[in-house]
Length: 155
Image (cartoon, rainbow, N blue to C red; front, top):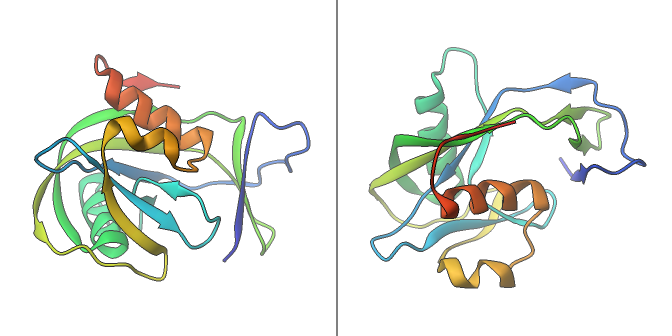
């Protein structure tokens, strides 16, 4: 389902839903971050998605990372909680979601890099190369927060 993201854009449509979601910072042994090239909005992103009924946030994070990248992870920490009402995602079915996502740090357990219906490319990217990728500002905030370290971010 095609998606268009808006951040603090006065022309953005009004939100009509909030879906709890998770996202994950996955790093390799060199500190490179796992990025996916999303099929719905064509941006590069960290893996993540909505929480399904019956799941914990840990389970949802592991499932989303596995589905989108082929990598098995476990959650080990929290980057922050991102709930900026200025960030909405509009879908072609008329749904307009207000952001509500918890971003976690993870540890790789195994798996093999693979694409999915949600990711046309999957790769590890060195932190100093992140700026070369087209990443929506709302996701860049999560990556920057992780790279800065410190206390979890709460918006």
